[in-house]
Image (cartoon, rainbow, N blue to C red; front, side, top):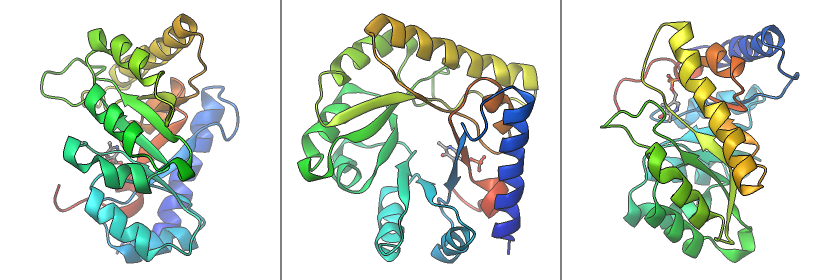
Length: 230
Ligand SMILES: *Cc1c(COP(=O)(O)O)cnc(C)c1O
């Protein structure tokens, strides 16, 4: 069994060290603990250690955990692939969705978001490494998607998310994240908006992402241990 409290402390220390090393403002990077495929008991250990922000990738699993933990104050982030027939439970249950990558998904979330909950925080997932098989909106389709999302009153566009092509080379890791930072700034200027979130960085490239401006890092393995499946 992983020692969740110790792992969280270690990941927190890595984030703070990277903020310091790369001249980022202290506490400007938020940790999302990615608990997908992991049992409720480990999520509870993370909560006991003070973690309040969690990421999940599978709708049914996420909602079961959320219901079991309804007495806790937790911010839930959905970070997984979205099927268009599964948007309603996402619109009804999540505070944040990081993986919006096409118009149909945005439209359905906008329609299905209960008004009483207020707008849902949205990040657009960008295929920053332009990999053919990868999720994320293609670079040449991003602007059309943004223009539509900006018209949707139940969506609050907060920023961009990416899962770059895997690399163990720090300079390569940084170059994809750097392009994300530039893209966010360009889009903010072009549309006169103030997207304030960059969701990038996982267990193996956390430092590179912080160096290039991540505001959310999504960490699973280094908190909860390796996943056996999915
Ligand atoms: C699983 C997952 C993570 C966590 O990755 P680790 O390498 O285990 O830290 C982060 N982001 C997304 C989108 C994921 O699906």
